[in-house]
Image (cartoon, rainbow, N blue to C red; front, side):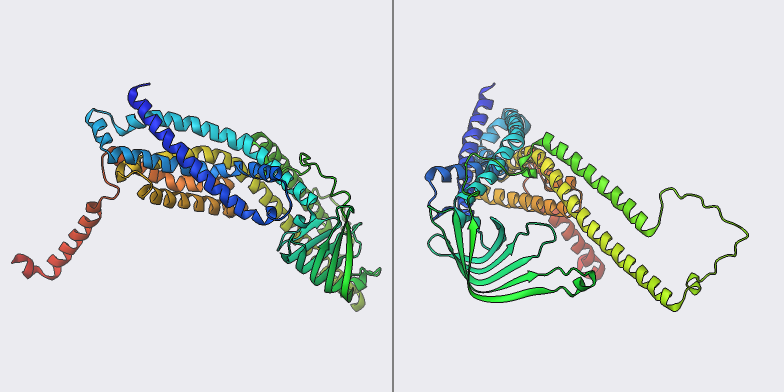
Length: 484
């Protein structure tokens, strides 16, 4: 390795490491801020909090790494151009591509490491993080109830609008759904103005005291015709106590792992295997539903030829004319019921298939994201390095402005594309790679202009056509003045 390559690599590594550490610390603070309500005031040990943060750190890397490469590239090459070191290199016959050669090799290695990290470390950390959060919530029952969403606590799903009190045990706006033991059992809903969680270290029973509420219970009549009336039982109460058995929840091992896999917890091979299973499951459901609906409407896959007797009298055009008025009413009523039932079945299956397709799209997006993070390092380098050489500014001023604007654009397009792909508005491939495809022309343009020593914007290319247009207008409408 030549002295110039060592110098450039050392300068870039120092800048990259400094920027990475600062940005990583900022994003960690953001994570702490997001989960501060779950960690603060819950009598958690320092070790548990440290483990909680350690498991949440790897998910920050896909955000911090490309931004660090972008900012470090702008700052490094901006400093070299500002101190006329680039001018000295070019006067010695060293081009921009030659200066970038050793850093391109470093970014290539960094991209491989980023892919390995996204494929192995992040899924493992995500798995640990979700399980650890669940186990903490089991160990501290008050944490199991988050505001504004339904929470699975024992045999109940509990939702509260607001939590207050020293340990978050004062609840406001309580809605409780009792889980049925058997399918078809009566559904119970309890709504209360406020409530209070009371527990004891010596007891495995969590007492929930509710005040000023209502009790609703759906009733399923034995007669089918009475079910359309949707009967239910309603009662009010001033005070009601619900005892929740936490004997199973309190058997907590912080190292216990019992949460099933999600797309964020899988590596490339596991994602491909899961996608194959999901696609086969969806195809089987489509085939099963189509065969079922065909049988219900009387369409057979391979119609059996029926021998007809030519001597028999042909049927009339209006078959209903063969029946009495009462029979006609019964037939029409049955046909209407069948049509309604088939429409409901089609709509229900359509919604189920959309959910399955959304799950497939999420797994495909997670698969492509592992490759996007590796390519993003290359992309940000080829944007940042020529941009720094063009603007000729180092330090933390102008480079940060450009880096933040470019990265926000990249992150916004990436998030927007993933949301569209999950809702099937575009393919998961395009949704995941859209941000890279949008910024790739910018990287090519900046590299071209920096290689040719052109500025960031060629104002002559913009103003010259405008001046020529005004000149032509002036010659056409004011010919006498132009002759003078």
